[in-house]
Image 1 (spheres, one colour):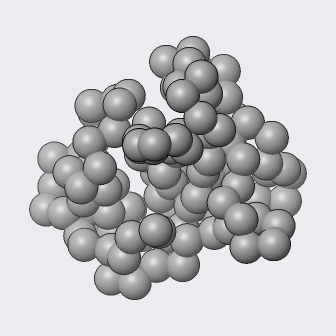
Image 2 (image 1 turned 90 degrees about the horizontal axis):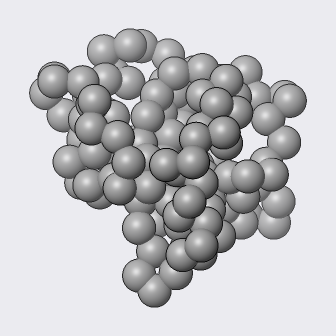
Image 3 (image 1 turned 45 degrees about the vertical axis):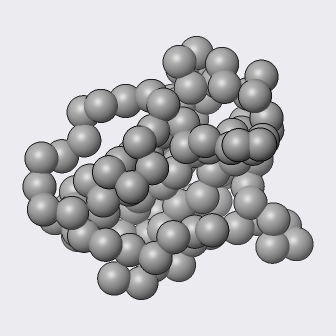
Amino acid sequence: MSVNWIKCNSNIWCPFESVDLSNVSTTGVYIIWHEGNPGRVVYVGQGEIAARLKAHRNNKEITQYAKNGTLRVTWAEMGAQKDRDGIERYLANAYSPLVGDAHPDVTPIVVNSPW
């Protein structure tokens, strides 16, 4: 499945800790990662994007990784729950996020990489 991964100003990945979420009303899947050499995926999830990301900004398990490099985020709109579950499972399998292990136990749905 091909999804449209969101970028912010000037085609740059969105800064996790400061991206303006006031106009984001999307439900979908998202990836939080830290830049660096190597960069790593910190968290993958799904749901109402703005609400989930605002909550994650207060999660020290996630924000602690800012010490390794700027935290970035991207998301893709996806309305159907079964699709979100499968995509989240695929992303978790593909990127082995540093935080979180309660991903849906469903058949993965392969999507294009944001990178």
